[in-house]
Length: 308
Image (tube, rainbow, N blue to C red; front, side):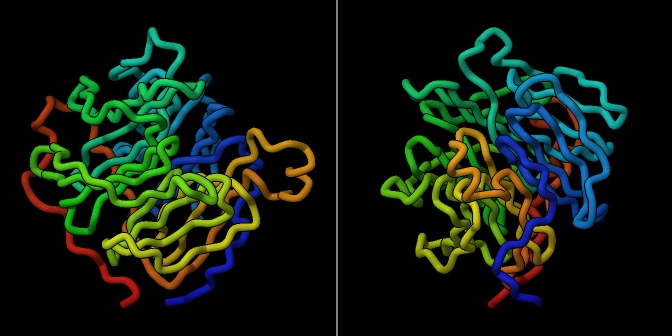
């Protein structure tokens, strides 16, 4: 397995807030969003094939089995068909312009999750939702800024970052029912530098956490020990995903003053590094069905094995 931990620019898209990278193994399709621009990028590891304008902020574009996406749009869950048309499914923020949806992910058995945040700092009003059929079910409330999500290789632990709290919590996860219980602190990164943003779990069960304003993506063992980090040439890495043994990293330029942008000419670019470990591809969202009936009662496949 190649080890080239220094990140290189893959696509210099100059995103305001790049986020939500996803890679589907069987198709090789890579996707990510620019939240502020309301744009979805569809690519592979060699070139960008298309961009789709959503018309409002979009926190995540989760690959769907039909070739489209499930959007975590500003107002809620929306299906983006392969022809570019949008069909709302559940819009819990339709009448609440003070909040928006942020990061999301599909669990190892196909359930879609996404969390919310307030535009302005203040009360912890963020909520993590699970999409059950056409209902957005609130699962975790009281979040400052719901962000990165991930699952352990055996599917029995769910991780959730709250950027404003500076923490990553772990939950016992029942993959047969989608219930997340027994919440416990996993990482307290509130002392900085930076705050935890998006995250990914590798085949060894270790977390890779993008540190907004921290100039790095940091790797933590399942017991919380920091193992290593990918030092970034930009201050705002925002999320990451694995494409085989490639770690794909989104970044942001939004909010940086002109002098800082001059120091960071590639802020907002999509980067790739090869840290010597692999991770699973995204699980495509299978589509909307009745709550509780869309998923097989079987565990996720075992990890493919990474660096030992």
